[in-house]
Picture (cartoon, rainbow, N blue to C red):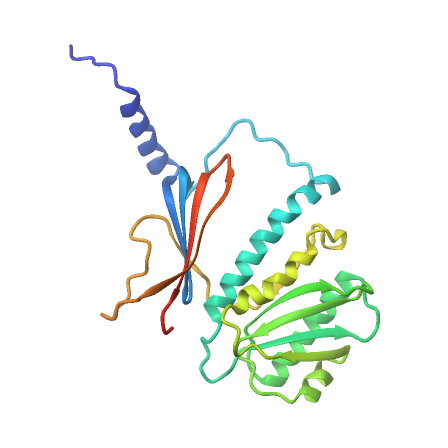
Length: 266
């Protein structure tokens, strides 16, 4: 009588506790990502592990080839778009003495080599930081024009007022266009849409399609209820629902409910 056989539920709970204490793995059916005034809430059908790494004996070496890259590319673009949209939401409006600026940089010459163009972009940012006198906070994405030339779209969060001709002279490779974004509510979505064009572009296979400066504010991820941030002041944060939908089924999460909220009067 003293040696009772544990039930399946008891074994499952014991194994979950072992994974949590030994591997640092926990499980949840919820995830909230808070990016400045935007809160995204995911509710999964299946438990998702986080906080550690589940070990598997049968790990296969990933084969990286053009075919596999072509299959994975849309998923990589989707992750990159989310990351960019959240970064911009976190940093937009965080520097009250400056206004956010969305600028397009093009090459006068037909620069089609991505590595060459990226090196020119890196050196330009060094010149611009030196000219302004402080480290600029920005997010930029790469796009190819119809003629094949590389150009960049960038959002600057702490770039002071600068005359168009003066900025073009510092760029020194072609033309610039400062776009008005004062009345665009979701700047992140507006900028990240340019990445969608890279889904089928072979020139971006296995290449970085966006750049960010150091020290940007990052989104906060919460895995367990309550799915919100605790603030030191007593003011209650009120959210307004923007979007609610069911995401496509997949074998890891099952059916997923997605909701996006925005802080009222942020």
